[in-house]
Amino acid sequence: MLIRVTPRISLEESELQEEFLRASGAGGQNIQKVETAVQLRFDVARSPSLPEPVRERLLILGGRRVTKDGVLVITAQRHRTQDRNREDARERLLALIREAAIPPPPPRRPTRPTLGSKLRRLEGKAKRSGVKAMRGKPASD
View (cartoon, rainbow, N blue to C red):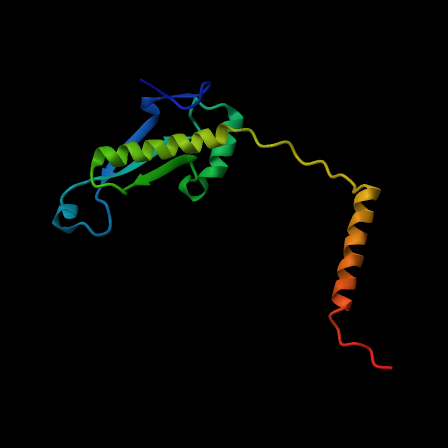
């Protein structure tokens, strides 16, 4: 089954591996016996579904969640049920891939300030200087 990420990118369901584990934190007796947390693994480095530029940006965006082998690991344990945590993990993965799919903006080309902008800046500074000079004590002759 295909999971649609963007109009051009779709993931195979088989590319995702889910592992269920016990959630940490408070939760009473239920937390010791039910595995509600989800650990979602997605092999970014070997995924045939991702174009190369998206793959590179995703590895950078993943940060510490990416292993040395290029596997992105997302752990979800916000909710009390396995299904909600599973949805949460998938949504976070898809959001990360969508963010990586956006191409970076073109690099800024440095420009020089115009003569007019330089003059306006200096006029503003002179005006401000005059205002501050008036705050001092009057000169006694």
